[in-house]
Image 1: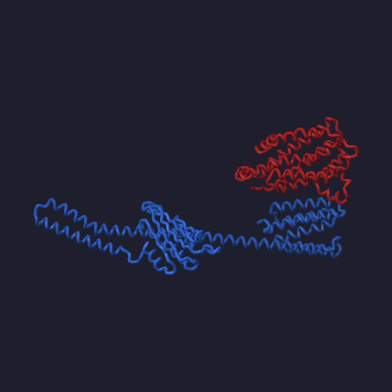
Image 2 (image 1 turned 135 degrees about the vertical axis):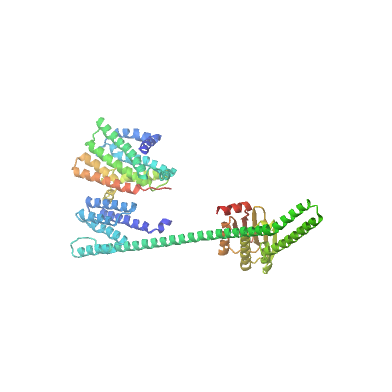
Length: 228
Length: 375
């Protein structure tokens, strides 16, 4: 598990990453609650955006490896590309799950009203894997770390707006609400609404199922080995 | 740009466009989340097809997904175009046509209720595009195979040509060695014998006291020396070739060329140049002069032959004008290959008229014999 350990170390080596991965989740716990919207405190509503952002920061490590020729050297190394990718993704997912645990159970400890914190944790974990898969698919298109990151920020903003994370979906026209269903952020939003409303479990399973389907799709698309 | 010419790009494009179409149908229709789940599952299969080459039976999964996830909606009916296309793409066009026909029959009999009236034409188009893609890929594979075989044959021919050239070089070198051996034997057996006998007789003469004996010895020495002279004269006469070789041959070629005014300069020891090198130099000169006669408007041509201890260099320079679209003919290309096969080079320069330069390294005698022994 050398790549796994090294990946963990590399993730925390960058000062920006260190701030992002440590202080940001804790800061989000202290965000206030909204009056009518969102159903959960603002920090938890926006945490999905942070997960998307952290995912791209972490997966650019793979992009850097590709640019530096590490992936090319792996082709003749005794480690397969699949193993390299899995160990990296495992490291990133461990970090993301830790973030989710800090945010959810930190909030519980501080008395934040989360309705069903364990289901919320499960929802965040599912969305973490989805955001990791989206980031992986995204970086497979690009060669440069900077352009991948910059364009992804616009994409994240769009996903957040259209998915109903930044503003309530009800204010959008019917057609846009229908289109919003295509985005993973919509399902995260629906998941958070379910947690606040305590609906039937089948709905929650559907929401998580859709998020995992997205994870599988983007994993398949992003797991190609590209040697430049 | 090369990727645009690949048929697989359009096949993958079609596959993902189908998913796009299904999503569009889902968005505009008032369809539930089950249809949306079906689209996601079909998207997974499409992504797997993009990533890997799935077996033909994976088409069953598409069909099963469309059949098992009910209630049936327009999404299900439109999605059936995917297995129809995939079957046709794998050359199973009969099965694909059966699927198209079967669905159309059920639709005609109102067993299947689709709001899309033109669904039959849509399925037919998917089938036809699948067949077209299959044919395109088959043709492309066949062309690639043919191109590979031709490339292989060309490489084989090149190798045989190089082997022949090397064998030619080796044969010439062996012929030289045989001739040297024959001359050395002839000199040893006749001339050497007689000269050695004459030397021994002159040495014996110093110790002979009897004058009669001494006269006999002197007569013997004279006989032997006469025989040696005759033998030497014969050997030289027989060995000297009657045909022109070497630089004489180049002189003859130049003097026979009447089209232009040619200046021939030569320098160095011509004996250092081997027979096989003269063959190539002669061919280069002939080719260059032929090109001058055919294509050049030059009035003067300069031929320069320089022989040093390490190389022999032949340059043929005509001072005419070169047409813009001129390119090397097969003659010069062949000569380049021959020059390369013996470690030399042939280059062409069009800056000031047309200049052909052939440079061949000269093997030292010991090196040539070592190379022959190694072979």
